[in-house]
Image 1 (spheres, one colour):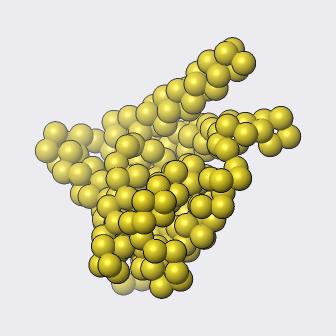
Image 2 (cartoon, one colour):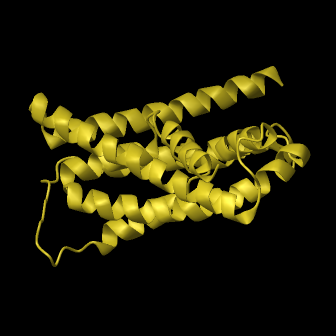
Length: 219
């Protein structure tokens, strides 16, 4: 049972990072611009935060889904709208930063005295500022609990949370390798890739703006 719990944690969280978003695009950019060493620092710090975040959300999931509706209003604003607004700001900010730094020459250092604190801190910050995981775990957390795929005792939830950390690390590691593979396979410059990532982040922001606009028009 505990093995199944661990495997479900890996599977669900890995699936959550398959669609392109700010986290996996950040990993792709790090892999291309700074190398896999910095990617590992980012992934490890991010996944550690993910373990604690998942454990808290799983403890919260059943109560939250029974008492909190994602379409409910918080001071007359939908919870989903608040999450989307935060993600819009994050996508625009990250896209702008990426665009500004698009011409910087990639620096890949393999020395032991690498300044890894930047990547570690970046991973911790994005691990905390990851609100899109809230509705994800509110839904899937409640789903696996109600279907009794996992137990809700502390040990089971800890195993599940650790599995989710492995799942995010696995998915992000695959993204990083895929990014370097694409760069080498098609001989793409970091300038082109940085531009593509910046534009894609802006597109995601525009999509969320249009989505919220359509919701408001239908109110």
